[in-house]
Image (cartoon, rainbow, N blue to C red; front, top):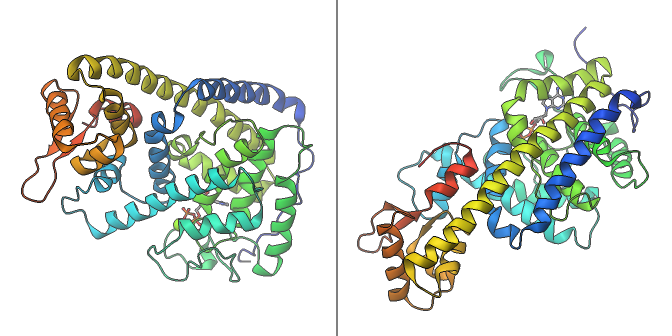
Length: 373
Ligand SMILES: Nc1ncnc2c1ncn2[C@@H]1O[C@H](COP(=O)(O)OP(=O)(O)O)[C@@H](O)[C@H]1O
Ligand SMILES: [Mg+2]
C-alpha cells in the first residue's frame, strides 16, 4: 500500500521518559544561560553579531539547497557582483528576505505573540518575489504536499504531511502549545514545536526556514534570551542526515524521545560554537578598536570600525553613510591609512563611477569559522 498523508500526534507528546531527559535538559539550559550572559554583556550586539546573523540566513537557506556563500551575500550588499549566475542571485534574494524576516520579527515581538498570524506575516516576507510559482506567500496551503527528492512523485515520497482538510485544527493546537507558559521545560517545548511545525508542513515552501526562525524567536518570547540571536542552522546543516532522520523517526516510530534528545544536544553544541565565535568577534573588536585609533588618530576611528562590523564588505559611499563621517576627504584619508596598515583590504579598485570596495578579512574569517579572505 502506498503511503498516506500523516495524521499528526496530539500535543504535547505522551509518555516521554523525563528521567532520561534530565541530563540533556540541564546541560542545554545551562548552555543557553551562558550564551545569554554573553549576549547581555555586549554593549552593541547588533553591530557585533550582525555577521553571525547574516551567516544564519546563509546556512538556514543552504540546508535545502541554496548555494550562495556568506562572502557572496556580503559582496552583493556592497555592489560587487562580478558576474554571479542567475541562480546565485536568486539565492541572495532569498537570504536577504530571511534576514529581513528576522529583524522584523524582533521588532514585532516586543508587542506581539508568536501566533499563527504572526508566522504567516513572516512567511510573506521570506517568500517575497522569489523563484518558483505557487509558493503562496503568507498563506497556509490548501493542497496536498509531500517531501522527497526534487521531482519525485507522491507515491515515492519520503514523507506525506497531513491533508489540508485537517491542517487548520492541528495548527491551532500547535499555536495553543506554543503559547503555553506552564510546560515542563522551554527547550523541550521548543524541540516539539520545531518538529511538529515541520511535520505539519503548513506552507507550500519555506517550512524549514520558518521552523528554524522560530528557534531564536521562541527563546526570546519565552525570555530565555535577551535578544533573539541564538541560531541552530550551522549545526543542523552539518548534521543534516540526522536532522532529517530524527524528524522521520517521529512520524514512523513515534520517537519523540530520540528527537528531543537530539535537539537538546544540538543546542548544547551550537551554544558552545556560538560562544566561541561571539567571544572571538568581541576580542577582535577590542583589538581593532585600539589599532584603528592608533593608526588613524581620528575621532572617527570607532565609527569607522563599527561600519566594517555592520558591513564587513563595504563600498566607499556606504562607508561614508554608515560611519557618519561628514566629508569624503576625511573618509578617504581614513580608508587609505587603514588599507596601508593592512587592517582592511581592497576587494575592487574603483574606477570612473564604480566605487572602491573594501573588506575586513579577520571578521569574515571568524564568522565563517575558516579563512576565506
Ligand atoms: N521527514 C521529515 N518530516 C518532516 N519534516 C521534514 C522531514 N525531512 C525534512 N523535513 C523538513 O522540511 C524542510 C524542507 O521543507 P521546505 O518547505 O522546502 O523548506 P525550505 O524551503 O525552507 O527549505 C527541511 O529543512 C526540514 O526542516
Ligand atoms: Mg524548499
